Length: 389
Ligand SMILES: Cc1ncc(COP(=O)(O)O)c(C=O)c1O
Image (cartoon, rainbow, N blue to C red; front, top):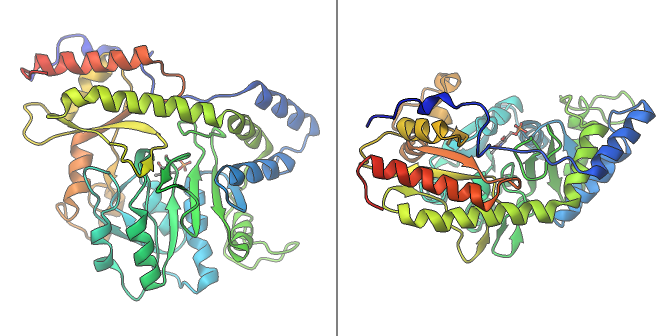
Protein backbone atom coordinates (compact mmCIF):
# COMPACT_ATOMS: atom_id res chain seq x y z
CA UNK A 1 0.00 0.00 0.00
CA UNK A 2 1.39 3.38 -0.98
CA UNK A 3 1.10 6.45 1.29
CA UNK A 4 0.23 9.57 -0.74
CA UNK A 5 2.98 12.15 -1.15
CA UNK A 6 3.30 14.85 1.47
CA UNK A 7 1.25 12.99 4.04
CA UNK A 8 4.14 12.45 6.41
CA UNK A 9 5.25 16.08 6.57
CA UNK A 10 2.70 17.47 9.03
CA UNK A 11 4.14 16.24 12.35
CA UNK A 12 3.87 19.51 14.24
CA UNK A 13 0.60 21.18 15.20
CA UNK A 14 -1.62 18.13 15.53
CA UNK A 15 -5.31 18.52 14.70
CA UNK A 16 -6.09 15.82 17.25
CA UNK A 17 -3.39 16.00 19.96
CA UNK A 18 -2.77 13.05 22.28
CA UNK A 19 -2.85 14.70 25.71
CA UNK A 20 -3.69 17.88 27.58
CA UNK A 21 -3.22 19.44 31.01
CA UNK A 22 -6.08 21.38 32.61
CA UNK A 23 -4.69 24.05 34.95
CA UNK A 24 -7.68 25.66 36.64
CA UNK A 25 -7.87 29.22 38.05
CA UNK A 26 -7.95 27.65 41.52
CA UNK A 27 -4.70 25.79 40.79
CA UNK A 28 -3.02 29.00 39.62
CA UNK A 29 -4.03 30.73 42.83
CA UNK A 30 -2.76 27.89 44.99
CA UNK A 31 0.52 27.80 43.08
CA UNK A 32 1.05 31.51 43.80
CA UNK A 33 0.23 31.02 47.48
CA UNK A 34 2.58 28.04 47.71
CA UNK A 35 5.39 30.04 46.06
CA UNK A 36 4.84 32.87 48.54
CA UNK A 37 5.52 30.50 51.46
CA UNK A 38 9.02 29.86 50.02
CA UNK A 39 8.67 26.25 51.17
CA UNK A 40 7.13 24.35 48.32
CA UNK A 41 8.14 20.82 49.18
CA UNK A 42 5.54 18.43 50.63
CA UNK A 43 3.13 20.37 52.87
CA UNK A 44 -0.52 21.19 53.43
CA UNK A 45 -1.59 21.07 49.77
CA UNK A 46 -0.10 17.61 49.37
CA UNK A 47 -2.01 16.42 52.45
CA UNK A 48 -5.24 18.02 51.22
CA UNK A 49 -4.73 16.50 47.78
CA UNK A 50 -4.16 13.04 49.28
CA UNK A 51 -7.36 13.29 51.31
CA UNK A 52 -9.48 14.57 48.44
CA UNK A 53 -8.09 12.07 45.94
CA UNK A 54 -8.69 9.15 48.34
CA UNK A 55 -12.23 10.42 48.96
CA UNK A 56 -12.97 10.37 45.21
CA UNK A 57 -12.47 6.61 45.33
CA UNK A 58 -14.04 6.04 48.75
CA UNK A 59 -10.66 5.06 50.22
CA UNK A 60 -9.22 5.90 53.64
CA UNK A 61 -5.61 6.73 52.76
CA UNK A 62 -3.78 8.39 49.88
CA UNK A 63 0.00 8.64 49.59
CA UNK A 64 1.10 11.15 46.98
CA UNK A 65 4.39 10.38 45.22
CA UNK A 66 6.44 11.79 42.38
CA UNK A 67 5.22 9.49 39.58
CA UNK A 68 2.98 6.58 38.71
CA UNK A 69 6.10 4.43 38.42
CA UNK A 70 7.02 5.32 42.01
CA UNK A 71 3.45 4.49 43.04
CA UNK A 72 3.85 0.99 41.54
CA UNK A 73 7.35 0.53 43.00
CA UNK A 74 6.42 1.68 46.51
CA UNK A 75 3.33 -0.52 46.53
CA UNK A 76 5.56 -3.49 45.62
CA UNK A 77 8.14 -2.51 48.26
CA UNK A 78 5.39 -2.33 50.89
CA UNK A 79 5.06 -6.12 50.43
CA UNK A 80 8.24 -6.50 52.54
CA UNK A 81 6.21 -5.39 55.55
CA UNK A 82 4.00 -8.42 54.90
CA UNK A 83 6.72 -11.05 54.71
CA UNK A 84 8.01 -10.73 51.14
CA UNK A 85 11.71 -11.44 50.57
CA UNK A 86 13.96 -9.86 47.92
CA UNK A 87 13.44 -11.58 44.57
CA UNK A 88 9.90 -12.76 45.36
CA UNK A 89 7.45 -12.64 42.50
CA UNK A 90 4.72 -10.27 41.38
CA UNK A 91 2.43 -11.31 38.53
CA UNK A 92 1.93 -8.62 35.87
CA UNK A 93 0.45 -8.53 32.37
CA UNK A 94 2.93 -8.91 29.52
CA UNK A 95 1.46 -5.86 27.78
CA UNK A 96 1.59 -2.56 29.63
CA UNK A 97 3.54 0.63 29.66
CA UNK A 98 7.05 -0.55 30.59
CA UNK A 99 6.83 1.20 33.97
CA UNK A 100 4.68 -1.63 35.34
CA UNK A 101 7.47 -4.18 34.92
CA UNK A 102 10.28 -1.76 35.78
CA UNK A 103 8.62 -0.83 39.08
CA UNK A 104 8.61 -4.46 40.26
CA UNK A 105 12.36 -4.67 39.62
CA UNK A 106 12.94 -1.27 41.24
CA UNK A 107 11.36 -2.67 44.40
CA UNK A 108 13.80 -5.62 44.35
CA UNK A 109 11.13 -8.13 43.30
CA UNK A 110 10.71 -10.22 40.14
CA UNK A 111 7.94 -9.59 37.60
CA UNK A 112 6.32 -12.78 36.28
CA UNK A 113 4.55 -12.07 33.03
CA UNK A 114 1.16 -13.37 31.91
CA UNK A 115 -0.28 -12.90 28.44
CA UNK A 116 -3.26 -10.63 27.84
CA UNK A 117 -6.56 -10.87 25.97
CA UNK A 118 -6.80 -9.13 22.64
CA UNK A 119 -10.38 -7.95 23.22
CA UNK A 120 -9.72 -6.33 26.62
CA UNK A 121 -5.97 -5.60 26.39
CA UNK A 122 -5.83 -6.79 30.02
CA UNK A 123 -4.22 -9.74 31.77
CA UNK A 124 -5.87 -13.04 30.81
CA UNK A 125 -7.28 -14.22 34.15
CA UNK A 126 -7.35 -17.84 32.99
CA UNK A 127 -3.57 -17.90 32.54
CA UNK A 128 -2.65 -16.50 35.96
CA UNK A 129 -2.90 -19.57 38.18
CA UNK A 130 -0.32 -21.52 36.19
CA UNK A 131 2.23 -18.78 36.96
CA UNK A 132 1.70 -18.80 40.75
CA UNK A 133 4.63 -20.30 42.67
CA UNK A 134 5.74 -20.50 46.30
CA UNK A 135 7.46 -17.15 45.80
CA UNK A 136 4.44 -15.25 44.41
CA UNK A 137 3.42 -12.42 46.71
CA UNK A 138 1.04 -10.30 44.63
CA UNK A 139 -0.92 -9.94 41.42
CA UNK A 140 -0.68 -6.53 39.78
CA UNK A 141 -3.42 -6.22 37.13
CA UNK A 142 -3.31 -3.14 34.90
CA UNK A 143 -6.57 -1.52 33.77
CA UNK A 144 -5.16 -0.57 30.40
CA UNK A 145 -6.70 2.39 28.55
CA UNK A 146 -9.26 2.70 31.36
CA UNK A 147 -10.77 -0.76 30.76
CA UNK A 148 -11.20 -2.64 34.06
CA UNK A 149 -9.29 -5.92 34.39
CA UNK A 150 -11.28 -9.08 35.24
CA UNK A 151 -11.21 -8.38 38.97
CA UNK A 152 -13.66 -11.13 40.03
CA UNK A 153 -11.35 -13.91 38.90
CA UNK A 154 -8.27 -12.07 40.15
CA UNK A 155 -9.82 -11.58 43.60
CA UNK A 156 -10.76 -15.26 43.78
CA UNK A 157 -7.19 -16.32 42.87
CA UNK A 158 -5.65 -13.89 45.35
CA UNK A 159 -7.88 -15.21 48.10
CA UNK A 160 -7.20 -18.85 47.23
CA UNK A 161 -3.40 -18.38 47.22
CA UNK A 162 -3.08 -15.73 49.95
CA UNK A 163 -1.78 -13.02 47.61
CA UNK A 164 -2.06 -9.24 47.72
CA UNK A 165 -3.59 -7.34 44.82
CA UNK A 166 -1.94 -4.14 43.63
CA UNK A 167 -4.11 -2.42 41.02
CA UNK A 168 -2.17 -0.44 38.44
CA UNK A 169 -4.91 2.12 37.80
CA UNK A 170 -2.52 4.58 36.13
CA UNK A 171 -4.82 4.85 33.11
CA UNK A 172 -8.20 4.18 34.71
CA UNK A 173 -9.22 7.04 36.99
CA UNK A 174 -12.98 6.93 37.36
CA UNK A 175 -13.51 3.44 35.90
CA UNK A 176 -15.95 1.08 37.63
CA UNK A 177 -16.27 -2.70 37.80
CA UNK A 178 -19.48 -4.37 38.95
CA UNK A 179 -20.47 -1.26 40.88
CA UNK A 180 -17.06 -0.84 42.56
CA UNK A 181 -14.63 1.91 41.75
CA UNK A 182 -11.40 0.82 40.12
CA UNK A 183 -8.69 1.66 42.62
CA UNK A 184 -10.82 0.54 45.56
CA UNK A 185 -10.81 -3.21 44.91
CA UNK A 186 -7.23 -4.34 45.57
CA UNK A 187 -5.13 -4.05 48.75
CA UNK A 188 -3.36 -1.09 47.17
CA UNK A 189 -4.00 0.85 43.99
CA UNK A 190 -1.58 2.99 42.04
CA UNK A 191 -2.34 5.99 39.86
CA UNK A 192 -0.16 7.95 37.48
CA UNK A 193 -0.87 11.68 37.52
CA UNK A 194 1.29 12.32 34.46
CA UNK A 195 0.16 15.02 32.02
CA UNK A 196 -1.86 12.78 29.69
CA UNK A 197 -3.94 11.23 32.48
CA UNK A 198 -7.40 12.12 33.81
CA UNK A 199 -6.36 13.74 37.08
CA UNK A 200 -2.94 15.23 36.58
CA UNK A 201 -0.30 16.99 38.64
CA UNK A 202 1.87 17.20 35.46
CA UNK A 203 4.24 14.63 36.98
CA UNK A 204 3.05 12.64 39.97
CA UNK A 205 1.45 9.53 41.36
CA UNK A 206 -0.81 8.31 44.14
CA UNK A 207 -1.23 5.08 46.08
CA UNK A 208 -4.54 4.33 47.80
CA UNK A 209 -5.15 1.81 50.55
CA UNK A 210 -7.54 1.19 53.43
CA UNK A 211 -4.87 -0.53 55.54
CA UNK A 212 -3.15 1.43 58.35
CA UNK A 213 -0.07 -0.82 58.38
CA UNK A 214 0.34 -0.41 54.62
CA UNK A 215 0.02 3.36 54.67
CA UNK A 216 2.66 3.61 57.37
CA UNK A 217 5.06 1.55 55.22
CA UNK A 218 4.26 3.61 52.11
CA UNK A 219 4.87 6.96 53.84
CA UNK A 220 8.17 5.71 55.13
CA UNK A 221 9.19 4.26 51.74
CA UNK A 222 8.38 7.58 50.05
CA UNK A 223 10.86 9.37 52.30
CA UNK A 224 14.04 7.25 52.20
CA UNK A 225 12.59 4.60 54.51
CA UNK A 226 12.42 7.09 57.36
CA UNK A 227 10.30 6.14 60.39
CA UNK A 228 10.62 8.93 62.94
CA UNK A 229 13.11 11.75 62.87
CA UNK A 230 16.12 10.53 60.91
CA UNK A 231 15.60 6.88 61.80
CA UNK A 232 15.73 4.74 58.67
CA UNK A 233 13.86 1.49 58.92
CA UNK A 234 13.43 0.38 55.32
CA UNK A 235 15.33 0.63 52.05
CA UNK A 236 13.41 3.62 50.81
CA UNK A 237 12.90 5.83 47.82
CA UNK A 238 12.98 9.59 47.38
CA UNK A 239 9.55 9.99 45.84
CA UNK A 240 7.81 12.97 47.38
CA UNK A 241 5.27 15.20 45.68
CA UNK A 242 5.69 18.97 46.05
CA UNK A 243 3.11 21.69 46.78
CA UNK A 244 3.03 23.05 43.23
CA UNK A 245 2.13 19.65 41.81
CA UNK A 246 -0.49 19.13 44.52
CA UNK A 247 -1.99 22.54 43.65
CA UNK A 248 -2.46 21.45 40.02
CA UNK A 249 -4.01 18.21 41.29
CA UNK A 250 -6.42 20.03 43.62
CA UNK A 251 -7.60 22.10 40.66
CA UNK A 252 -8.13 18.90 38.64
CA UNK A 253 -10.14 17.26 41.42
CA UNK A 254 -12.60 20.18 41.27
CA UNK A 255 -13.26 19.41 37.61
CA UNK A 256 -12.84 15.62 37.83
CA UNK A 257 -16.50 14.92 36.98
CA UNK A 258 -16.30 17.17 33.92
CA UNK A 259 -13.01 15.62 32.70
CA UNK A 260 -14.32 12.10 33.16
CA UNK A 261 -17.66 12.77 31.49
CA UNK A 262 -16.03 14.48 28.51
CA UNK A 263 -13.56 11.63 28.07
CA UNK A 264 -16.37 9.09 28.39
CA UNK A 265 -18.45 10.96 25.84
CA UNK A 266 -15.49 10.93 23.46
CA UNK A 267 -14.65 7.27 24.05
CA UNK A 268 -18.25 6.07 23.64
CA UNK A 269 -18.71 8.25 20.56
CA UNK A 270 -15.66 6.75 18.86
CA UNK A 271 -16.55 3.19 19.92
CA UNK A 272 -19.91 3.74 18.25
CA UNK A 273 -18.49 5.35 15.10
CA UNK A 274 -15.85 2.63 14.75
CA UNK A 275 -18.56 -0.04 14.47
CA UNK A 276 -18.43 0.65 10.73
CA UNK A 277 -14.80 -0.55 10.77
CA UNK A 278 -15.52 -3.63 12.86
CA UNK A 279 -14.30 -6.05 10.20
CA UNK A 280 -10.92 -4.31 10.20
CA UNK A 281 -10.17 -3.03 13.71
CA UNK A 282 -10.61 -4.22 17.28
CA UNK A 283 -11.53 -1.44 19.68
CA UNK A 284 -12.43 -1.73 23.36
CA UNK A 285 -16.08 -2.11 24.33
CA UNK A 286 -17.92 -1.10 27.48
CA UNK A 287 -19.80 -4.06 28.98
CA UNK A 288 -22.98 -3.69 31.05
CA UNK A 289 -21.12 -4.52 34.29
CA UNK A 290 -18.42 -1.87 33.88
CA UNK A 291 -17.72 1.78 33.23
CA UNK A 292 -14.62 2.79 31.33
CA UNK A 293 -12.43 5.54 32.78
CA UNK A 294 -10.92 6.47 29.43
CA UNK A 295 -7.26 7.21 29.02
CA UNK A 296 -7.06 6.91 25.22
CA UNK A 297 -8.69 5.13 22.28
CA UNK A 298 -6.94 1.94 21.17
CA UNK A 299 -7.12 0.63 17.61
CA UNK A 300 -5.82 -2.89 16.89
CA UNK A 301 -5.69 -4.10 13.27
CA UNK A 302 -7.38 -7.41 12.66
CA UNK A 303 -5.47 -10.24 10.99
CA UNK A 304 -5.11 -10.50 7.21
CA UNK A 305 -5.37 -6.84 6.16
CA UNK A 306 -3.44 -5.60 3.13
CA UNK A 307 -1.68 -2.82 5.07
CA UNK A 308 0.57 -2.75 8.12
CA UNK A 309 0.16 -0.91 11.40
CA UNK A 310 3.06 1.35 10.43
CA UNK A 311 1.32 2.33 7.18
CA UNK A 312 -1.92 3.03 9.02
CA UNK A 313 -0.11 5.11 11.64
CA UNK A 314 1.87 7.04 9.01
CA UNK A 315 -1.41 7.92 7.36
CA UNK A 316 -3.26 9.17 10.43
CA UNK A 317 -0.18 11.00 11.73
CA UNK A 318 0.19 12.59 8.30
CA UNK A 319 -3.35 13.89 8.65
CA UNK A 320 -2.60 15.47 12.04
CA UNK A 321 -3.79 12.72 14.40
CA UNK A 322 -1.26 12.21 17.19
CA UNK A 323 -0.77 8.57 18.22
CA UNK A 324 1.28 6.23 20.42
CA UNK A 325 2.20 2.59 19.94
CA UNK A 326 0.02 0.25 21.99
CA UNK A 327 3.03 -0.49 24.24
CA UNK A 328 5.13 -3.66 23.95
CA UNK A 329 5.14 -7.18 25.26
CA UNK A 330 7.62 -6.30 28.00
CA UNK A 331 9.33 -9.71 28.35
CA UNK A 332 9.80 -10.34 24.61
CA UNK A 333 9.90 -6.96 22.90
CA UNK A 334 11.74 -4.66 25.34
CA UNK A 335 15.49 -5.17 24.79
CA UNK A 336 16.13 -4.28 28.45
CA UNK A 337 14.24 -7.45 29.47
CA UNK A 338 16.27 -9.77 27.19
CA UNK A 339 18.24 -11.06 30.19
CA UNK A 340 15.09 -12.82 31.39
CA UNK A 341 15.53 -15.24 28.49
CA UNK A 342 11.96 -15.19 27.20
CA UNK A 343 11.51 -16.01 23.53
CA UNK A 344 9.46 -14.12 20.95
CA UNK A 345 6.16 -15.97 20.59
CA UNK A 346 5.75 -16.76 24.31
CA UNK A 347 3.17 -13.98 24.75
CA UNK A 348 1.34 -14.10 21.40
CA UNK A 349 -1.54 -11.82 22.30
CA UNK A 350 0.64 -9.11 23.85
CA UNK A 351 3.00 -9.30 20.89
CA UNK A 352 0.09 -9.15 18.45
CA UNK A 353 -1.37 -6.04 20.08
CA UNK A 354 2.02 -4.39 20.12
CA UNK A 355 2.67 -5.17 16.43
CA UNK A 356 -0.85 -4.25 15.31
CA UNK A 357 -2.04 -1.66 17.82
CA UNK A 358 -1.92 2.06 18.32
CA UNK A 359 -3.80 4.56 20.49
CA UNK A 360 -4.99 8.12 20.02
CA UNK A 361 -6.19 10.93 22.31
CA UNK A 362 -9.78 11.38 23.47
CA UNK A 363 -9.09 13.87 26.24
CA UNK A 364 -11.30 16.63 27.62
CA UNK A 365 -10.14 19.27 25.12
CA UNK A 366 -11.16 17.16 22.12
CA UNK A 367 -14.47 18.12 20.53
CA UNK A 368 -16.90 15.84 18.72
CA UNK A 369 -15.95 17.56 15.43
CA UNK A 370 -12.36 16.35 15.89
CA UNK A 371 -13.64 12.81 16.46
CA UNK A 372 -15.66 13.03 13.24
CA UNK A 373 -12.44 14.09 11.55
CA UNK A 374 -10.68 10.96 12.91
CA UNK A 375 -13.47 8.79 11.48
CA UNK A 376 -13.24 10.55 8.10
CA UNK A 377 -9.46 10.10 7.96
CA UNK A 378 -9.73 6.40 8.78
CA UNK A 379 -12.58 5.91 6.30
CA UNK A 380 -10.62 7.59 3.52
CA UNK A 381 -7.63 5.41 4.33
CA UNK A 382 -9.69 2.23 4.22
CA UNK A 383 -11.23 3.18 0.90
CA UNK A 384 -7.81 4.07 -0.53
CA UNK A 385 -6.63 0.56 0.36
CA UNK A 386 -9.57 -0.98 -1.47
CA UNK A 387 -11.81 -1.87 1.46
CA UNK A 388 -15.49 -1.06 1.51
CA UNK A 389 -17.14 0.53 4.53
C1 LIG B 1 -0.14 1.44 33.03
C2 LIG B 1 0.88 2.42 33.52
N1 LIG B 1 1.55 2.16 34.65
C3 LIG B 1 2.47 3.02 35.14
C4 LIG B 1 2.74 4.21 34.50
C5 LIG B 1 3.81 5.11 35.03
O1 LIG B 1 3.37 6.39 35.31
P1 LIG B 1 4.37 7.65 35.27
O2 LIG B 1 4.62 7.97 33.86
O3 LIG B 1 3.60 8.70 36.00
O4 LIG B 1 5.61 7.24 35.99
C6 LIG B 1 2.05 4.53 33.32
C7 LIG B 1 2.32 5.80 32.62
O5 LIG B 1 1.68 6.24 31.75
C8 LIG B 1 1.11 3.61 32.81
O6 LIG B 1 0.45 3.86 31.68
